[in-house]
Length: 82
Image (tube, rainbow, N blue to C red):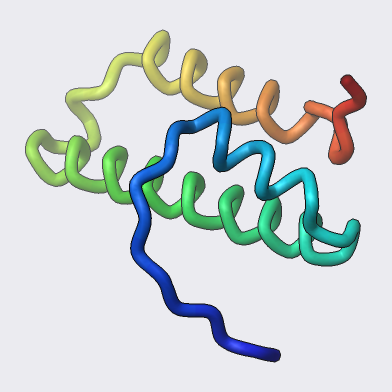
């Protein structure tokens, strides 16, 4: 894999434009990496929250709500169409 190195100030729309120019395989790799990073951040946030209070302080409603939210995320289409 070739390495790219640069520093630039760009808008979100410009970033999206750059991403749209990538080949499909690289777009999928980027999407998978971003998804993994987002899941890790969510896990870290939840883990921090749980460490701040004892697990049995969670209500059943909170547990069910979190499970439903995660199930929604898992059921989203893998390749959303525009």
